[in-house]
Length: 418
Image (cartoon, rainbow, N blue to C red; front, top):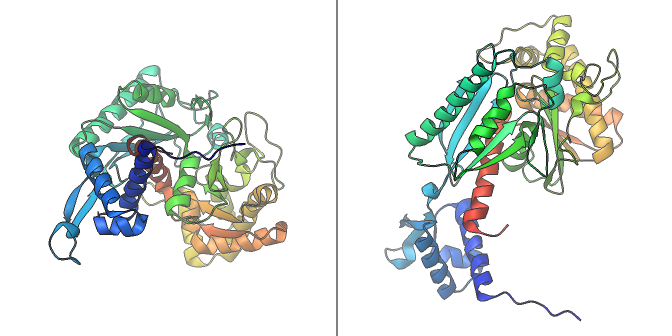
């Protein structure tokens, strides 16, 4: 016979504190009365937890409520946003983008560090390992070029943090192409990516007092679409990243799924009809990448008489898709949608996510118009009802997902609990 366990006073206090902190994070400053209403806790319990949280430096008075008369009941309490600082980093073959944020996830500063031609092979967006490998994005410069880029990136990160008043960074989340081992957290480069990627991770991890979290970049994009983007509120969905290359992330039962080796979503290697051959273990020529990568979309556009000059850093395929939507190029959009639906169908008939989000720069460029066409084509290929949505987090989804991930980790440590 088992006996029900009763929470100890210290455990109950920790649970109540975490509940209050989560409410302050979600809703912003609240009065003690608000907290009593939202938590169901007694007046003395709320008073005690507010005193504890103020002593810990996590909560401070943040003015008074305009809806209440002056006095103790009108005092607003809010999270101390600068109690800890976070950073998100997006590593691409062309360089690094980074953002520094406070404990609430509010962006405080951003920066980019461009790679030289010798350390970059010209990628223009996040992609799976397969996409990077197929594109041949191997660093061509010597070790000195990569070392200099690593040094400049770390210096830029620290300078950006200092400019916004962050003396140290509590947690840094890094999005990188490649397989991230779900147990060890190590990056499996497999020799297809610039050497400086691994060196940058080592340099960040060498800094004392900062936790560094590594995640596959498309997985971070999926986290962003799930938490703040097109898949918000859904327990199940799959993101297909359409950028320079092809990748996917999968969320089932509200949890990101990485697979045994971190390889969930390597759909560039997916064998599909309509290509000239089959992919192999090292190259995804003949796989889904050959149908829907940036280069493939540009070739398809040219065949339909669609050419567009990129605007600034905008990838060529993104410009072509925007032009097609703007000009009503139905034949091109239908053929592109058919290609995307082939890959989406393979995901759907195995996982049945119920929703597919078209992410990345190209997914965002196609918008609802392309998503609707993919949904119609997908309905012809799969017996499972699946909604297709355009991603809303766009090309910045990797950084957004990195900040969310860093914030979750920092708050777990500072707030306690899971």
